[in-house]
Image (cartoon, rainbow over all chains, first blue to last red; front, side, top):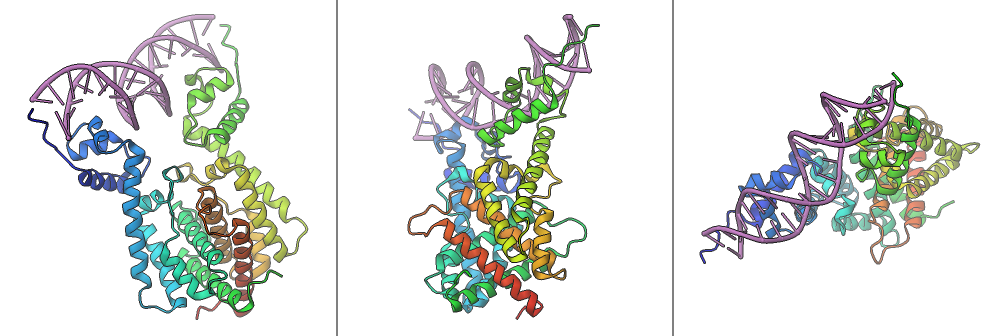
Length: 191
Length: 191
DNA sequence: ACCTGAACACCGTTCAAGT
DNA sequence: ACCTGAACACCGTTCAAGT
């Protein structure tokens, strides 16, 4: 009898793991580091999570909810066109503030995931182009946003002779917004 | 005297490493596997490459050249607008055929890299929107293409109730093309 | 000059043993 | 019921020793 006292909890472990991912990136997260951070030994982690992947999935799910909330707050009380610009800004903002967490949202081996396609995005885009093109248009803007912030995080926009990333971002969002609205008017025919 | 015979070469090692990356992905590439594939022991690899990262960089540089050539061939002898559609199709084609190689092109720790922004893309886009917006427009289409193929490779387009990825891709390229051409006419003012 | 086995410091993970 | 040390099969990398 007198079973061993619990020195930690799922919540503690999740919190520590999230902090370590933020600091060292997903690839830099080791089970021994997580264990150290909560005051136990690595093997004990397997009492709470099946393996490293399951732990990362739990961190990912938590981060996904934060990300969605961040986007939802940004578009609140805005007209569809204005909402898309706000959404884009908030999206980029999150990725720049929490690059390692953003990348965690897109780890393919942690499937199933929604990546960046949140319900908020679908609603905003549907308001812009109507239901007929909602799916394709959502993919268009999602792909652009994901691509832009990924390339920006990778330092692909730091070469000499290139204008500011801010300017390219604003221009691109404007271009896509105009293109989307136009496709709604014309029915989106392709030549 | 009688120095040890060379059992392999930089070229052999590169070829083996590229094949292993294609098969197992970047993360699945181990120095011992590469060594086995060329018939030597892992420590001998360090006579030819400083470390795993240097080897991956060499594979990346080779892949980058192939990718650029693939895009250049696709846009040859096409008008700017048609060239952009061809470019987009070739881009997606490469990523689908060689997903692990495409991902290798975007490994941030292997910097400096150009990622997917090849000279071909810049030329095609410049022909469309003029030199004033060439940089921002190139980033717009590059970001979309990178985001789309990344999300497609990650399986984010396989959910139920969603139309074909082909359709979303064609729609998106059309939308962005229209938006870009429009920005060239109007001067790209934002609201 | 190139190759080798042994070794080091790391991983994720398992498991028998403790309380 | 939870924690532990020891161990296993992997890593990348170094290095002295061989030819």
